[in-house]
Image (cartoon, rainbow, N blue to C red; front, side, top):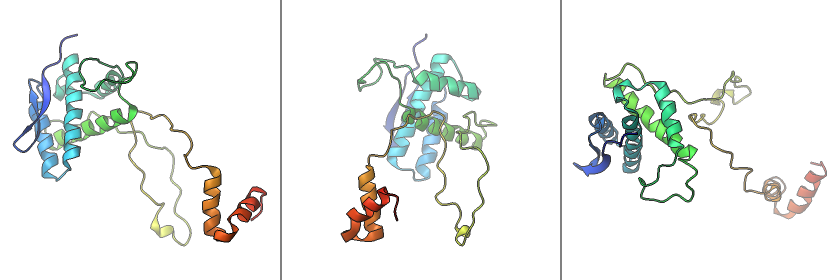
Amino acid sequence: MKPCAPVAVERRDGGLRLVGSWAGVDAANAFLAHLESRAFSPATVRAYAYDLVNFARFLDERGIDVAGVVPTDVFDWIDWQAVRRPGRDKVVAITARRGSAPASVNRRAAAIRAFFEHQVLAGARQDNPVPAPRRGQGLRPKARGVLGHLGPGRARQGGRLVRQPSTGPSSRSWPATCASNAHRACGPRSVSSCCAARRRGGR
């Protein structure tokens, strides 16, 4: 395994830029400048910059040119992130058996997807090699009822390339939920009796 080309994030000309010998530095910096021109928050630009560094190290380690990335390379990069590489990060991980968390991998994938979308808009590529995230399949039911014109409600969020483990049931207990619902339905003086009726199957 050859050593990675030096690539890092530095503050230059009032913004964050990638520096080093990686062949994609100029393309990455053009993307970061594009984010700044669109008034993205400094925190978002910083996160995208370090996500690009992560991707650059993978490409250099595998000998892949940024212009030649294909979808299978993206999945190889996702697998690559699951392996802990000691001695690179300043923060020492609690456990050395785990790589990046699924949430971190999904965030990086979104950043790289945006980077390649910028490459397509700039004419440097014909397509975006980052696969679209998975979404729920199947037909959506049509809106019905008096308020059907308002649509199905809150828009669905973007999908993920990596499944995140379930965090378990809500931290709010059943008695607390029942009391809150009963307070709204029955008033503060009838909370206990209303909850008891609900447990017995009453109204």
